[in-house]
Amino acid sequence: MRNLIHFILKNIHWLLFLFLIFISTLLMINNNEYQRSKYLALENEIVGRVYSVADGISSYVGLRITNLELMQYISSLEAKIQVLEYQLKEAKIKIDTISILPDSTILPFEFIPARISNKNISSIENYITLNKGSNHGVKRDMGVLGTSTHGVVGVIWNVSQNFSIVIPVLNPKFKLSCKIKGSTYPGPLVWDRQDIRYATLEEFPRHVETHVGDTVVTSGNSVIFPEGIPVGIVEETQKQKNDNFNSIKVKLFINIGDIDHVLIVKNNFREEQLKLETETGNVN
Image (cartoon, rainbow, N blue to C red):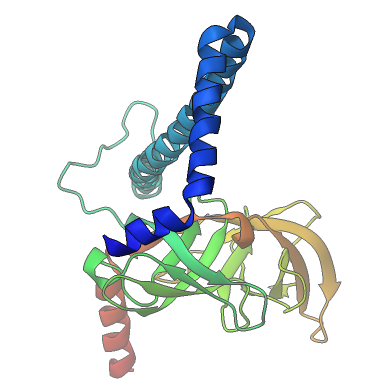
């Protein structure tokens, strides 16, 4: 209290000056129509801007909620797509007799929506951090796709309770089994460490006819990704040192720098398949 009184006494002339300015401005506005109209216009402008900012903040919060709902919807749609593809592959397709999967059927793949918390794509050993971990069913070696399923993002490398680390396509440690759409011959897709827009499909059989513009898709020869996920398009074909194979330059569909959300791929038959393959290997 003593400090307050001391401050007032020390600055009494400035406080008095500001008080007189306030009183004179108030009298001028109340007794002058032109000045009053200008004041009201300024007041409306300030209030309007405040409401605009508040509305923008409210809209942003609403967009985040809407975005989460959309991610859940995309995940459910992708699961339905897998159901339809499963039906077409497993059933003997006839116009009048297409078998319908019962509700109890376990889908081969499910999808967990996630948001990118951090990403490093400016070096060689690139990585991405997701906001989903073991508490959400995420495990190591699960695949990661773009939300439109047009483009492979990478593979889960490490997992904590609430976060996971992804080795993306833009990392030389990552290899993806791919094929040209319509063919059955797979080859490893690897990043050449140069351009984030391109990767190389190596060891691809030379006798398989390829053309610029052909679509490159996942081969399905693993327990990580479903078959037929679009990865990119053929940009250029080159001969390798081994005369039996070509090296294909692929322009990737995915632009990791532009994405904020992804789908984590959960293979429900992964453990069963790996166990059977391990047992078979032990027998041999």
